[in-house]
Image 1 (cartoon, rainbow over the protein chains, first blue to last red):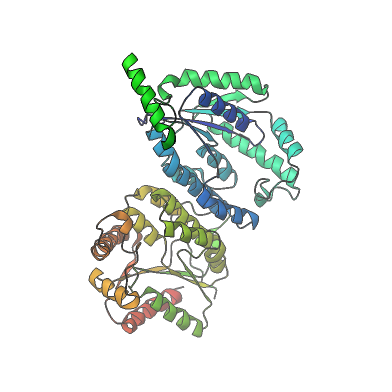
Image 2: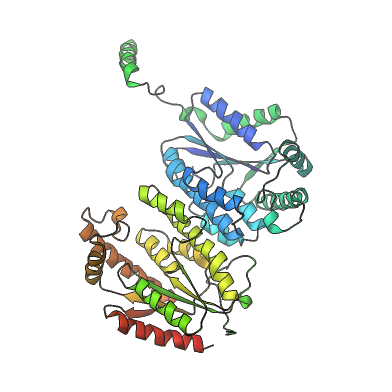
Length: 249
Length: 233
C-alpha cells in the first residue's frame, strides 16, 4: 500500500483512527480549524457520509438487514464514492485531506465481524495509504465510559449485537470494542500508525498533533496561492487592487 | 430433494456459512439484454415447478438493501467506476445472504437471471482489474451450471429495437464514450462484452448456448441440460 506522496499526488492525506470515544474526532476538528486559519487548502471527510449510499446504509442498519458481508460492502461503496468523487480530485489539486476514519476502520471492524482479512483488504486495494495515520489509543475503560455516559442508547450494529456476543447491548459493546482494539493494535506497525496517548488532555494531544503534522508535511506548500474566490459582483474590486500590487512589485 | 452435491465458493466465501449445508442446485443463465434470457427463465421456472421442484429466482438489482438507491444513482449517472462496482457487489451479496444461501440450504433450485459474470464483464470492459474483481466475488458459490446465451450483436440490436424501439443507455455502454451515436456504441459495447465473457470463460467454464435460434429450440436444450444437472445428484 503506497502513500499519496509516494504516488506523486501533490496533496497529502491525514487520517485519524481509534475506537468510538477515543477523542479522535475532536482532535481532527481542531487540526482542521488550525489549518484553515493558516490559509491552507484543507478538506474534511468523514466515514460513512456519502450522500448517495447513506440512505441504503441507514435502511440496512435500521431494519437490521446487514450481514458481515453486506455490512462490509456497503461501507466500501460509501468509501469508494467519497474516494473517487472527492478525495482523489482534491489530492490531485494539492489539498490536505483530513479523514475521520479511513480503510483501517473497515480492516478492524469487518474482520472482527468474521470477514476474511485478505478479502476486505483486497476490496479496498484501490485506495492509497494515508501520508500520516494517527491512532488514538485510550484505555478501553476510558473510551467505553465516554460513550456509555453520553449516549446511553446503543444502536444494534454499533454494539456489535449482530455478533451475538451477549444479549446485553452494553456487555456486547464492551466485548466488540475490545476485539476491534485488538485488530487495530495488530496492524499498527504494518501501516505505520503513530500511536497517540488519548488518555492525555485534549489540549496536550492537540499540541502534539500539530507538531506531528508540521514535521511530516511542509505546510507552506499547501497555502492557497490566491485569496478565496469572490462573488462576481466584488471580483472587479480585487482585480484593481492586484494591478496596483503588481506595479508596486 | 436431498441431492447432496458439494458446493464450493470461488474464494473465501461468506462468514458463518458452511458449504456442507448447501444442498439444492444453483443454475445461472447469462446473456445480454435481448438474448432471450428472461423468456427462457420464465419457461424454466414454470417447467421446474410443474415437475414439483421448488424454485426461487434471483437477478441483478433486485436486493431489498440497495436496489432503489442503485437505480437512482444510475439515472443520474453520478457514480464512478469502483463505486458502481461495489454497489452492484452489495446488491449481489444481499441476495446471496438472504435468498440464495437460505434456498440452497433448504434444497431449492435457484435460478439466477445473470450472476457475477455479467458484473465482472461489465467492470472489465470499463478497465477494472480482473484480480480485484475475483477477490471481490470470491463470496459467490460456484453454480452447478452456467449457461451463456450467445447472440450476435447485430441480432441483439434487432431484438432490442423491436421490443423497446430504443437502445438502453447502459446496455449500449454510453458511459464509455465509444461513440456519441447510441447505435454504434451498442455494437461496440456488446462486442467488448462478448470478448470479456470469452476471457472469463477460460476461468469459469460456462456453457455457451447458441441463442440465435428460436426460443423453443433453446429452451429444449436448456431443459435437457438442466435435467442432467438435477438428476446427476
